[in-house]
Image 1 (cartoon, rainbow, N blue to C red):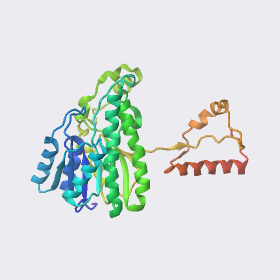
Image 2 (tube, one colour; image 1 turned 90 degrees about the vertical axis):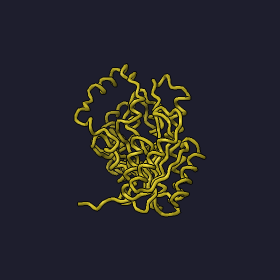
Image 3 (spheres, one colour; image 1 turned 30 degrees about the horizontal axis):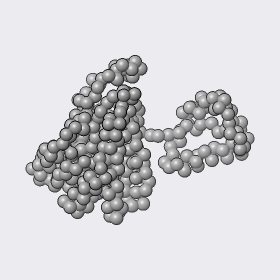
Length: 330
């Protein structure tokens, strides 16, 4: 049997930890010996209002079980708020080892109807909020030579969900943020991964089924059979993967992972082998691209670049092979 994964001596900052996924993460890290800064503004699933009750209740629950926790009620949506959250963890526990960025909410609408209020609110909390907490925490982790970031992405951004353009845009930005934190943190014992959780939570109550007006998307919703996993769409089914990614045992970084109905998987971003245009300095025509589009989209051979330059390396290798073999570009 595998050795227990523990968090003794580690300090975790978890945003949006007053309910749902974040609450479950906080309780389990504390149960496994970690100290937890429970951050929650206390707003609704639509990001309205504020209350100290949610974060305080989780802290009380952790302490009642003999664990270590402190509450924080700052908003992640400002740089000052992010700095205050990290400072609160340092004041309470002396350092920060883990950040799980989980704070967020939904304000669904048709793409054409999303105004600045609906867009800015989601960008401010999901994307900028994660950035504002991660940056001061990263500085501490770099000095200490250790850190774990788990950013909360979404299948809505990775695969698509109608009426969530604002939410998906914010969550999609987190993919890029996590990748860069992983690259820059690799020399300092810092890992960063993106988790795509799936759970019935307060956010689900904010879902407007107006998206069913889109025939193709409505068909995919209707064809989805939840009966086999209905009882596995609880926050607790996301926690094992989130905590593994946040643990000392996990050395994986720069990854995207999905937790969905008790199925845990890595999600890959890959490029097809594609089509190399003919040698020479003359760019191909639009018609050339159209004529080779099937080859451009052929997924028989895939390459997974881990940096921008990995893609350049693969392209250069394919071009050299073309030049050496004299193979036609068809």
